[in-house]
Amino acid sequence: MEPNLTMARHAEARDLLGAFALGALEAQEAAAVRAHLATCAECQAEIAALWSAVDALPELIEPMDPPPGLRDRISAAILAEAAAPQSPTPAPAPAPIAPVAPVAPPAVPERRLAEPIRPARWWSNATPWAAAAVILLLVSGGLLAWNLRLQNQIEAVPTPETIALAPTDAAPDASGEVTYLPDDNLLVLDVRDLPALEPGQVYEVWLIGDEGAPAPAGVFDQETDRHAIVVDRSRYDTLAITAEPGPLGTEAPTGEIVATAPL
Image (cartoon, rainbow, N blue to C red; front, side, top):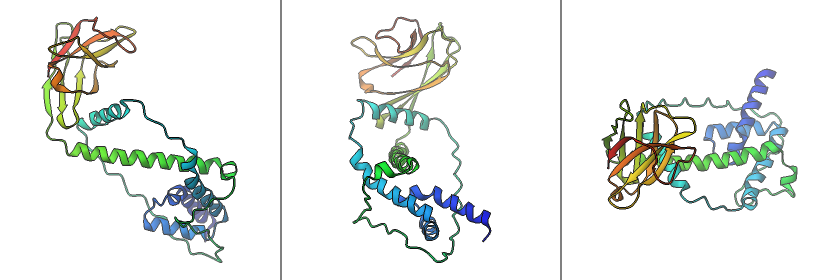
């Protein structure tokens, strides 16, 4: 076999070792990686280290509680992005690695879930690439699963309600709308052509009800922007936008209202 072709297949198989260690490959790709492992001592050593990393990670990572409201903020941002019109383009399927016929194969380490490989002092001996690859794959897999669940929730949402944003004399050219997604208690504010901010200012969103002071609902710093708010809509009847000192805004409005919308 040509040396260049052999090196290319080695590189392709080596790139798939992390996913192979997690059992995340399609059957054809996994078969190609196994065939390559039968002839490559370098990749055999790396797959052994990766399998050990998968076993060791649960013992090394301390559980952490996420900050309050993190899920709501991330969900709101994803749903706001999904609310915009999009023309998705399907990603091309990856080209499978052609299986390599083994020649005088050496023994390949077997992976059995019931008896994981645990060499002594793995963490001090494993290559940085092996540890980084496994951690990245684990994190990416978790985020992908959560994103798929959120996308399924988005597809099940009924037709959203859209409310026009009304400009004031302070921003006569402004326009936009507020979209309400009832199943998620989510308001998506889409605003365009607000006046340019003064240095050090941000736009701040306020929710106003029949009783109590206006409640701050986040800031943004672009004249045309999209902003998502998780809110109990029944508590408020008006949304308003003002320019306030940045970068975090204020606890009560001090600037002139530039746009409003009834809720």
